[in-house]
Image 1 (cartoon, rainbow, N blue to C red):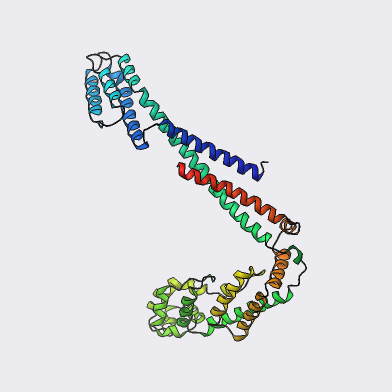
Image 2: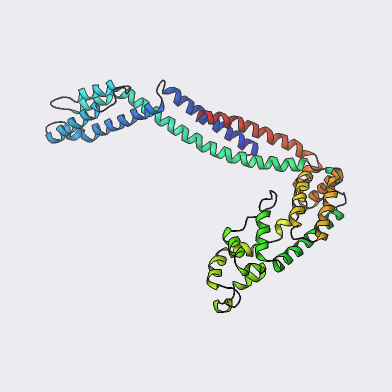
Length: 379
């Protein structure tokens, strides 16, 4: 089986070869730009099509009508060519070769021969198009490979950032604080959606949608407007979702306009159903220190809108733990080494191979980037 490095080297060779083919085809066109070459190709294909289509009918004495039709169409075609079109005289000479009272297959061959230089340009243009198509295909694979390498680089960078000596560092206190916080924020959020008016919940969620590190969507404007302007907006989210399961006749006893309620709220009910505490919980192992500090600041501001003082206190405890950079990094390294890495990755960190592999992957990316930049200029 081909190794990853061999596979990349093969791709780079294919990319370079396809690029050379494109450059060679462009060079073979000489002073002709592609637009002019394409015009020549169109004229050549049309001329050859006329010659091939009418040769049997216009030669000999069998079909005088076919002869006249061919002469008229070929003359009109040549007369309609742009005066500035390169090789126009070759088309004019081809027209003279078939400008005879009686035509033979030799006359048609002579006309084709007049267009030999044009046919070479057409062949070169076709080669250019094929080489460019091949180059784009290989480049597409190379770009996909680059994405894989970038993901590999990011993973190796994270592994290289771990402290291999921290495997036995104690993590119980940090993990217990995170676990206690998560339990608290889930309880607070459940109380939030069961006790607080839905219009207030949506107002808060609209504000929270602007927090960069929280995965929260803004509420649909239709819901916000409806609950702001109707008494049912005083009901909590849990009760509103319960109303949606009521029959129309039963619902009439709880909302001022059941039809309007169902028409405005039901289409957007998935948003209410999916309100969850998960965006406010903290993963284990936790993120790297700098990102975690930013995340904790956002969480403290967000959770303060519905959470208890006790829950907020746990966030402050985590911020304090995070400020001791060396201690936090060792605890996080220990947690990642124990729980997140597979055996191969763990050995890579403990043996110090992560940095070496990271440097190798970065070198591969640099080689690929350099060639991709050249390819973009070639295309």
